Length: 154
Image 1: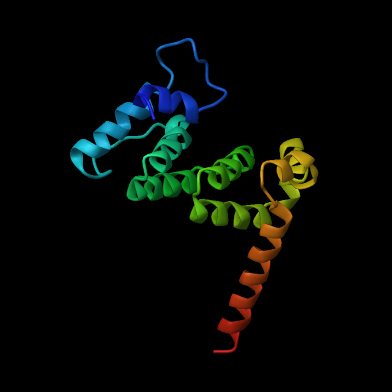
Image 2: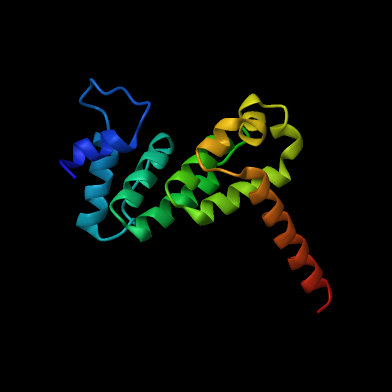
């Protein structure tokens, strides 16, 4: 696999590759997680949560990955939802992806006004990336309708 620095550079495309800063903060947070054995003492900057999620997935640290998923869900916004959803799908974060799908359904009107969301839904690049957001939204909506139906019959 090479050095952890190379792994972080590999999993964070779009970041500048010439600087020493690439991946160092997520690497430092990853080492802090391993050293302390948990997330209690960690303060993760919002801007670095997705990189840390990616690293946790790469190094198969399920508890750290789940912690990052929870933090992402707490900071999700109309502006960040598409990028967060793509990260969740690419980095095997199913709970975060499901949360994003629910967020999409709840904020559909505002999201349809954004180019990034329309591109996700209607663009070919989503299919190329292995994403099928319309199918995922349909499944999420069907599951929620079924859940409401079951609880209303009790």
